[in-house]
Amino acid sequence: MKKSNSNYSPTRIVIVGGGAGGLELATRLGNSLGKSGKTQILLVDSTLTHIWKPLLHEVAAGTINSFEDELNYFAHASKNYFEFHLGQMKGIDRTAKRLVLDPLTDGLGHEIAPERSLRYDNLVISIGSTSNDFGTQGAKENCIFLDSRAQADRFQREFLNLYLQAQARSLQTTSPQVLNIAIIGAGATGVELAAELHHATHEFIRYGLNSIDPSNVSITLIEAADRILPVLSTQNSAAATKQLLDFNIDVMTSRRVTAIHSDSVECDGGIFIPATLKVWSAGIKAPDVLKDIAGLETNRINQLVGCSSDPTNLTR
Ligand SMILES: Cc1cc2nc3c(=O)[nH]c(=O)nc-3n(C[C@H](O)[C@H](O)[C@H](O)COP(=O)(O)OP(=O)(O)OC[C@H]3O[C@@H](n4cnc5c(N)ncnc54)[C@H](O)[C@@H]3O)c2cc1C
Image (cartoon, rainbow, N blue to C red; front, side, top):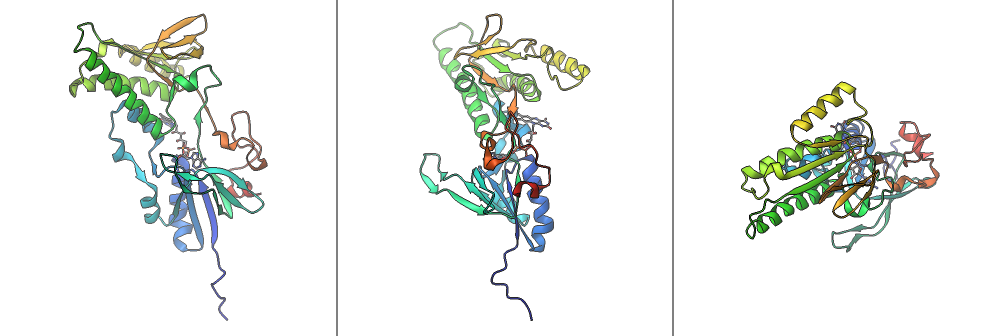
């Protein structure tokens, strides 16, 4: 006799975080296990759309049309045999095997959905990283971080606003308008952002935003190590330094930032670098939500340890 289907619930793999890793995994699992109908693949992300993080410095500089590079999770899920659920992970109930999500709110703080939980059989956590300011005084208040589309958009707005302010000021005075930008941390993000901003200052002129001459935009890249891109080879680092210097970008190495102020960056030795726009790209950590989550062991930068890449390991 054929078994009744009424109580049948397929194995459910829940993936939290639809970034470079999670989105690829959901897509591949969707098109294999999900398509067969025997396994349900569910992707959870705190945003409705995905943009590949390595493009964020271009979004910040305003040199790409980010809407063209954005992927809508619902649309992508429907074409690739998985489901999408909008929500932010708050915790895990490992005994009941449920993923707990924060209440969902709109941009104005109104609640759209209350705290809720989703059943899982296997759970994959792929929520990426956020910037680590190492508790540097004033960093949170005065720096922009480039962890998300929203933060890149914020930088873009503030960058453009400074040009608009300069345009208005130039109606009142003939003195040249200047702009100081400091980028703290010369890893891939800081280096790419510096070069992209140089490019943007020339692009603005083409679009008629000519109130600040590119030669009056000072971009300073500050790095604590003795060379930029310290994880790459010395040859790559030297080639990138030469390129940045050719762009008139000030490259400061062996310089540790001790505090960030509203109009400057303070370095050891009492050196103050004037800066209106300040970007922090000096380190990363796993998101704070992972700290002490469900009794799982984490290291000093919140990364889960003692869990293999086997997703079932997390469900124990
Ligand atoms: C400006 C910039 C440039 C970069 N350039 C390069 C490069 O050139 N080459 C390179 O290899 N790498 C580069 N990287 C690093 C690369 O982007 C990351 O290594 C990669 O994105 C990590 O993938 P991930 O899936 O682990 O996390 P992410 O891609 O960060 O995705 C994490 C996802 O989790 C979601 N999320 C976070 N918290 C929660 C939560 N609590 N609940 C639900 N969802 C959550 C986020 O919305 C996001 O969609 C760059 C990064 C930046 C910021």
